[in-house]
Image (cartoon, rainbow, N blue to C red; front, side):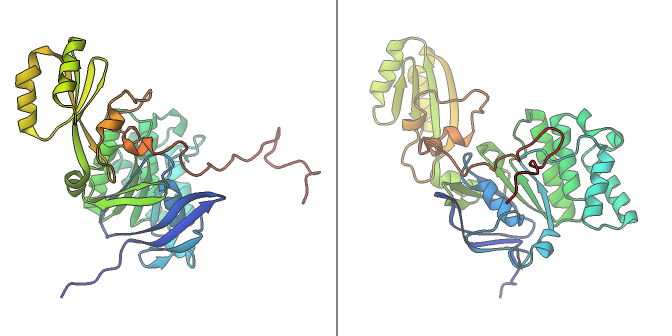
Length: 353
């Protein structure tokens, strides 16, 4: 007889609309305690909307969401006590020091003074920012600010950590260090982590991955299972001569797409690669292997056969895979910034209801 457990996060039939835009369409899943769970999808897929519902910022139009068994709609304050959140947009007060930011957060959550000081010291040490505790936040780099936001999210002993695209805008070294902190937190604190991202390579270390697009769940499994079921390995070849590219495309008509001297082929494994290199290796200028996760699509070569890479994007970014090709406009509208008037943040006195 298996021992029952209460899911750390439970979503059942959640739907959310912004006017005519369907942001979430009957979404359901569960996250187990101490699990590293990833929501993977392009910008506008509904990932942030889903986190905002779990954080009690938004109310769903239908469905239920629970945090450690607590309904986030009926008992938002109780549900919020177990949550630590790192939002997509920076939310630190850059006019305060690192210590003051963490101390203020602890005060908001009612952490006792002695315990608060101890927790601040522990969290700053964990993210390697103890030497900077009296510095103003505005003096930190982007990577250091992200680490401080993680520390702040854990000051009040949160049991569940939400990371909304935490590595956007960070360099490779900062991304690697941030993930090291996340894995270390899980092992030391029995922490449940839910992360949203559109970088495929970042979810390989997760326990499970949920692929979401247009507000719908397309697939949900371990990274290995998703690769086996939906993954495609592509060979991107740049030939020395256009005639060689033409010959390769003619030799593999069913699995190759040609764009001038570049050819993209769908690989079927190591044997195919060895045979291909034995035949064309001396006539190739450059060769690259790419992995694509393509749930619900039969072939990725149609979408990546021509250059689609945006300026600043990374090779494994999911939005350059077929998920992107299905969208002419993405996602729910961002909330507008509040109007501002000179010297104050409220409308003139004549603007009354």
